[in-house]
Image 1: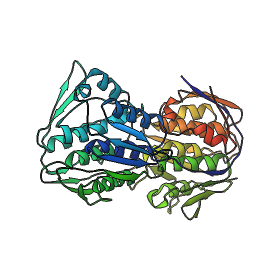
Image 2: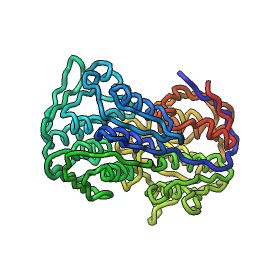
Image 3: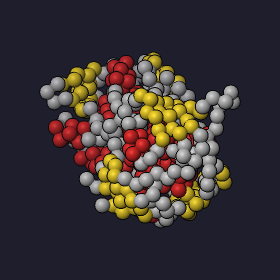
Length: 435
């Protein structure tokens, strides 16, 4: 188990460029399974989850060629190993990678069947797959849970377009159903679809490959089935979660940081969420500039009541940034209530912040009140373990701002979502060593 050793108290300064979006990469890489022709994708992040998915595609027979430019790969799924797709080795590989769930839709659409187990990933509470399966069933698929192998066998000889109202605006569920529906006979209408920028990007790629998808950017998608998709090119957006993480780092321990090429139009309300904590953010072209924050004061609502920040489906605040926002609030002036609605266990990491000296009241698994120190009391270093990707980066930010040396274990979780993070932060003035 690898660790980070962090010497806290160093101010960061300079320019940093966000990586390609992890969640988009997982979706569009799976979409390459829908065509026999070559699909070239640019700006793929060099991170654990994405690299594992690429290896999984290689294992099932996809030809993967790295381009001359870093982060560019060409995928050609002209011949797939059907026997391996049904093997225990494939099932075990899927169990270790949550992104593998998005292979079901493409395989079901193109091959008429898929075998997959419950995928792994963050330990942040229950993340059910019902939305995926209910959508596939609506399209005409049948699935059986095989208890002995703990796998799902899904089969559909002829998918048929239909109307469906999703029980939740699941991002991966929407992506999976859209990819299955592109080959379904007739028209599929998906209401209460997720509409995050990464879903929009997936739909744009599929349309360039020959799909017929309208309503992109809304929660009502219409897919007219086609018989075949061809090759195409695609560039992945900057990772909005990494952009938000860098805003948090700059607020806590920055001495003037420019976050370059962030695709501001695709950040939604993320910058405004930090501004509600009093963080100053300047926009210059497509860059964000976060000046030194000697003090930042949490806003109140118009009627004077305590500020509340809550996660919600897009265009609401992404739950992936609540961990970072909580850390930033520990050094603000004022108090704020955080309401994590979507996952049962995502706030439990605050115990580690409390051990570092933060004033946080964990009301229940979904709500926490942070009373900011206004930089009068510095967090103290300590030893901790990363429970998931986002809590891991939040703890790293806390450690960088803390007095003394900290150790974060289980940093494989951070590596799943952040590309060469210690090298990039050390270039700004941090002192982080991998142990």
